Image (cartoon, rainbow, N blue to C red; front, side, top):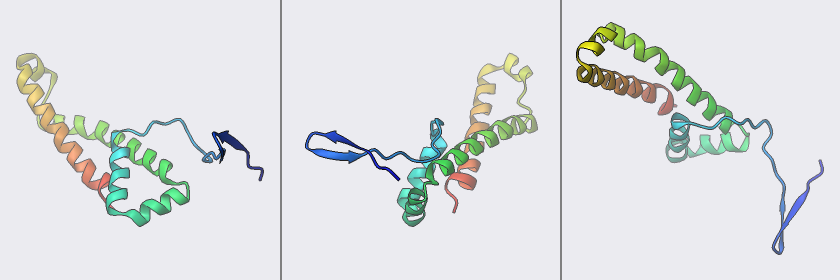
Length: 117
């Protein structure tokens, strides 16, 4: 393995690149998971960093959270009778109910995926 260096002032810094990197930008839930691991599971966090599995793990958590929210919110809205007819009749009531549904769905997602072991 050939290591190349870049001179920065008086120092030579190795050109190190993580293998298998993708261009996925870690979203809200991935960042929340990283913070949780750093603060409450430092050994697991260090292990993920050292084995280069942190970013795939965060990507998986972020994508899974978004997929689950995309399924849960419409299901909860249908179960509670929040429809387009309600939106046409009383927009503020529709917004209030949808915000409540989104907050509850997000709380479930956070407990099950982000803040779990």
